[in-house]
Length: 305
Ligand SMILES: [Zn+2]
Image 1 (cartoon, rainbow, N blue to C red):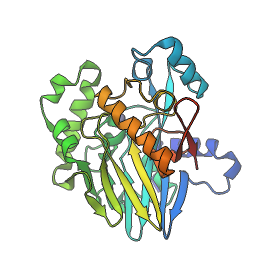
Image 2 (cartoon, rainbow, N blue to C red; image 1 turned 90 degrees about the vertical axis):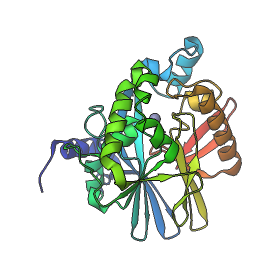
Image 3 (cartoon, protein in one colour; image 1 turned 135 degrees about the vertical axis):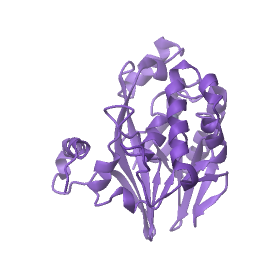
Image 4 (cartoon, rainbow, N blue to C red; image 1 turned 60 degrees about the vertical axis):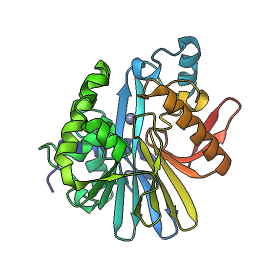
């Protein structure tokens, strides 16, 4: 086996966080079974977010204590990246592809962490993108700018694909995200015919269908898996964190490209999830990101598996 730097770093991190289970080193951070099928999350590492992406123009005196109370540093916030991996029969479906090596040094760990589970990128049969942001899309290509998941069919919402493929997006997205637009367009071009465009309600596999959750990006989508008498909703970044998005879901999130639409989507999603008790997976939620939403005294809380 060729030891790559990325694999080596991934191993070190995983051992550090799995001290109590060091005899069984597995990089899946959360896991549940649905009948004979299995849903796990696999870490791609963390993002380190600047204050402008977390607090932005929100009232600092109220926002900062909420972020701190949830255990995060507002000016240097570590956001975990949980890639959901759905395994049903011969299908191995990865939700989002992670950051790859070109976004942040603290992210792009998916290859090493899959390898630790005995899986290679070639074993993935489907990659479903929730949206076109770097931490979800850029990992779809390897360091040679070729598709990493060679045997996978890739899926993205048609509206999301149109937005990031439109050359005008570079001019309309704003200076802070211009690199996102250029990076997404290039990667979508390489994926080309390997990418299938999806709409709300489209069934990718039996029991796995796409759900429209717009606002974080124009065509952001989630997916619902119904199997073994259970149901799980992959929400992507529609619930983007475990602090302000839960405590003040009606506040605009600086991370959302259409803050008003993001609020509407988030509020209805949180209401539905709290009422139904349906299991959900949040890409940037803590402790592996699989869990349930519960109503709290103010807003909502996330209870991990
Ligand atoms: Zn995003």
